[in-house]
Amino acid sequence: MTLRGLTTVSFYADDVAAAAAWYAELLGIEPYFQRLPGYAEFRIGDYQHELGIVARSYAPHGPEIAGAIVYWHVDDVEATLERLLSMGAKEHEGITKRGEGFVTASVVDPFGNLLGIMYNQHYLDTVAARKSG
Image 1 (cartoon, rainbow, N blue to C red):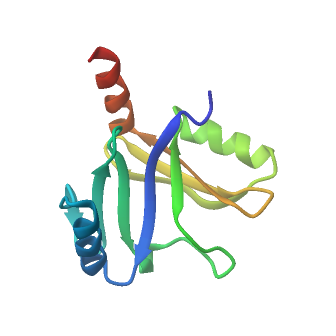
Image 2: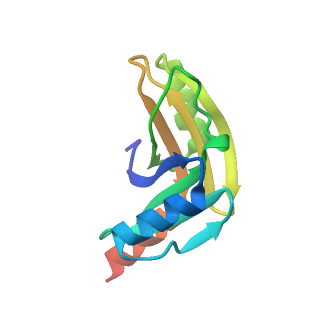
Image 3: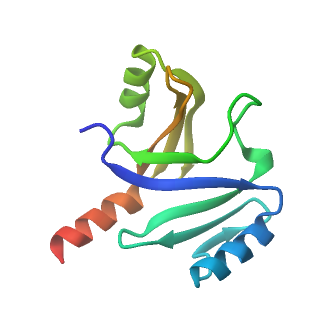
């Protein structure tokens, strides 16, 4: 199984603190993690999916791509990226270590869609907890 499950959706904002405050009001919870001025993250829903608010200056988008990046958990980011590229996808952002247990990459598929892949330890921990509970 290549794409195991949704891990993170990253939205971009010029003012991360303002966007985090707006989403905190909408969601009724505060971000569980913040590193301002560049990043804030919420865990939401039954599976504690991650909603990240990222400073727009960090967005890897070029002018031809707009919108959020949705990251799907994969067990092997390097192998999955290689497979995607062999199938005609174009690298958008190469393999990037985001911290202990979190590695991302993204591609533009042959149809112009942005596809994020991620090794996400939080996702694995959540799946394990649900299986044991």
